[in-house]
Image 1: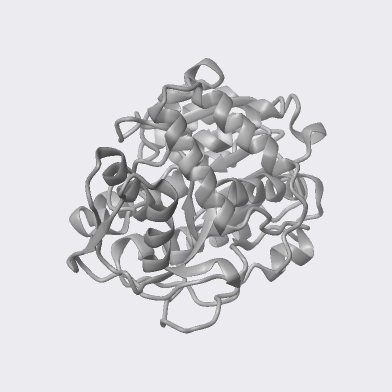
Image 2 (image 1 turned 90 degrees about the vertical axis):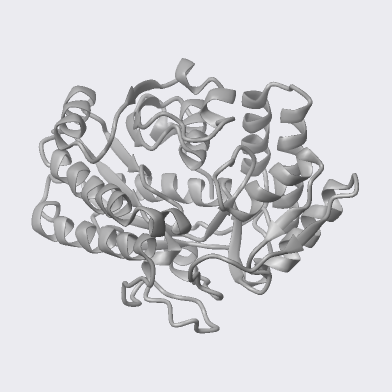
Length: 357
């Protein structure tokens, strides 16, 4: 159920996108487990930024650069000679993909191709996890969860780029990583990931936190949209467990994997903002302003395969996840040590029992 310290202790691990929200949580957790972490990413694009608030640069050998640059990616991988690669670097916002589709496609598709191409030359590389998104699936607005064998697709440039990244991963795996002695390559698809330290633009929880902290009304675009919400520790644990199994297994795990909450934590936006306002207090409020380009109204994933074959399942639950987010951001406003706050939440997660469905 938890990442194995005996596997990670002393492992050389490359994390792309380490300066981002999920990358910061992942890198901090890996360091806690004893891994030697190298990061490759752009400078943080938000102010404040979690990676700076937890002083991640003190713990990680950080390389600042763009995964669209194949020479840079190859150089960092060659110099690092990692045992494990976790690829999170991406343009992660649907609305931003409408503004700059080529940047989104170049980063998410060619960035993945650059990394996998460079990984071919690394002796001793054991496993690679390519992190994509729940939006990689062709979304027909069905009211049932998508499984790993569903078709790839995407209405918007972001979703299409993630579907393409999955296809690139599958083709490179078959072409270059299927022979004995080659690393095992898997992909990970998570739902709407939330947690302390996310300040991304045009994302529900960051927008709510920014508004509440400033004493303003939060602006909600799609109150009826339904999403598979999960705290960042849930999929990040899944990524590490998948990397372990890829490294130690016979290659059967070298495929796509969903990491998603139970159905009870699939909620509409309206429920989320109401719960956040209630927990924040201080007169927190919100209003609805419908605008912007197309976004899916219903999307959720089936994580039965990860539960059955990786012994991974969600444990935190959405109610506690919202409490943790409030606690983390209250700690930020109070000037507390956010690295310590984050590590305490990771430790608390590791101690949790499995959550009943």
